[in-house]
Amino acid sequence: MPGRDRSESPSPSMPPVVIAAAGRGRRAGGPKALRRWAGEPLAVRVARTFLAAGCPQVVVVVGAGAAELEPALAALPRTLAVRADPDAPMLASVLAGLAAAPEADRLGVLVHTVDAPRVAAATVRRLAAARADEPDADGLVAAVGGRRGHPLWLAPGRTVELRGARPDHPDGLRGWMRTRGLRIVAVETGDAAVLDDLDTAEQFTGMDGGVDRGARR
Image 1 (cartoon, rainbow, N blue to C red):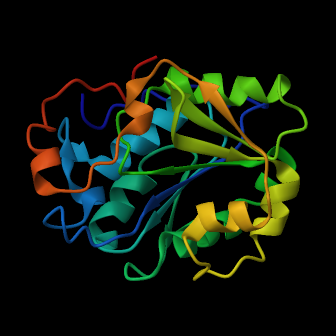
Image 2 (image 1 turned 60 degrees about the horizontal axis):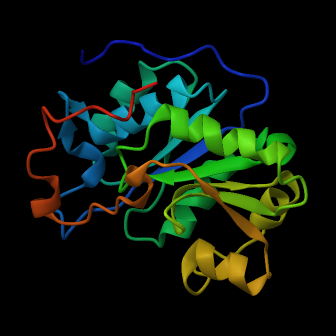
């Protein structure tokens, strides 16, 4: 039910997450972070997913609609709202969130977006667990059927490097990773929601009252 805290206790092995939720959502008819899902703003529902996965810190980067989102996010445990320019590239939001997550330099960082709100908490844990199988990878990305989606995990060393990236780097975070030749390993999750890219008002139709997979365990 809306407002209910379903978060797991933080796991010492889980990294923090930065959730990009600052955009104006012009094609969606307004900020996607404010869209309602099961009676709550979408940004809050996505934050709950990562709390349920055991993340020790959830940093939600807000912009458009920040005044409405901040009180709702402040009511969640281990969750911090950070403001960013809603008209800036998404990489600027990632960098703003990363600046508020010092543990990322030790544990790496998960990067997610409100565009993919239905990813299950179990999927997040599966991605994090795969770090043990790929100790030399620069990062991991959730995939299904060989197709890559969200979330992404960046290794600690790469996280330190990312802090120095330009917010307007061509093609954003993907472009930065490609320029540096990072080895990002796809982790098969079996969760089709990792491919979600909700971008238009039509795609959001029927979201409220739908299946709440984001908090699923």
